[in-house]
Length: 506
Image 1 (cartoon, rainbow, N blue to C red):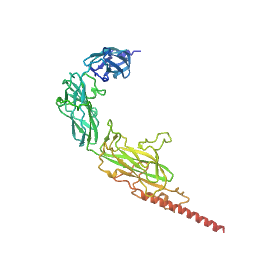
Image 2 (tube, helix red, strand yellow):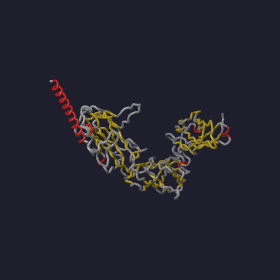
Image 3 (cartoon, rainbow, N blue to C red):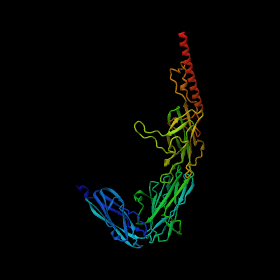
Image 4 (cartoon, helix red, strand yellow):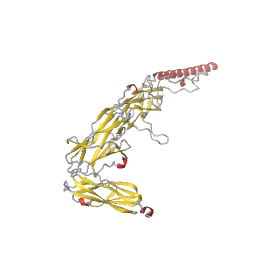
């Protein structure tokens, strides 16, 4: 049933682009289209799109949730509509007969069961302007909190002018702040959204321009790596899919940003992208652990790397696979058998981010796989370790290794390596009945590791104070000595009891 309460005040609004530029080869961009219910909810909404005036000049590739209803026609069913709905109906490809200068139109008809029908139109030009950007240079050694500059530039390599001007959209990684310098630019409250600016300069085919002033950025204190990027398109043409003017509520207060002519050349490749690196560093601290148990036991250890800052290794949307690695070498006399499996409730064990993916390797290289590895963050790997035999003084290691393409520039290498200590016993622990201590004297089996050994437990790291964890060798030797005494003591108790029984019998 149609909800009549909505019908009186609800209207549909079509948001269509003014122009669609179809290249003479390849494929055109996706068509920007949106419909909004204003004044209330609309129901049974659909949009019919008709590009049949381009018959013989273009073919259609249907995308999104629309269905073909004939040659160069689609219908996009929206259904119930509250607010705005973006539609991705199709893209066009030129036919062999299409030539620069051919024209046509795309028409739209939006209907609803409880709102008036509305129509719209987009003019199509084969050829048209084609704006390609100049890449930003890679910048290095930017001081934390320092200002650095970027200058967008573009060329029109198409067959027609962008006679109504151009739009510039600036987007950046987090960790930088764009100065709000220009009154013809609209700025976002989100650093990664950046700003957009409009220029009314007509851009003729074969010409190139850059902004008449650079964009100014400030790198945040913890920022180590990032990027800046921009795109340009003709006013009224196809905007980037991510562009929404409502994301940019603030307007700059300074002089308008303008354009100045530059010499066209091969440097205009179409990608307005460039990376930057600051001089900030991140102190990586290796996290060690201790293998504790008896020969034949399989136990768990947790090792890894902690970022003690002050730098943030943030590689979201960049080409880095990791923030570095850590190399794990098990102690002599032990074997890494894998990672713990599901627990009693069926919860999965830890992810395996290490190579090789097999038991018994001499060492394992584990990725610091976090794409945002900030101060205070830690990346760890839990291993299962089998104690094969007691090797006096044995110890393994965990070593942090930087990503050579994106180094963390660690200025404290002393804590890059931590120890994997061993506290292993070669025989079963004696029961209290065979190793009782004199009253008031602690049992040897309860003897703690020597103070200051620094060996961690199975639940955490071991590195503190910027130095390596202690080896724990004294603890191994002490436990070995205690085990020998207990075995010898047990034998003495047995022999004494036997002699006593024989004497009594005689």
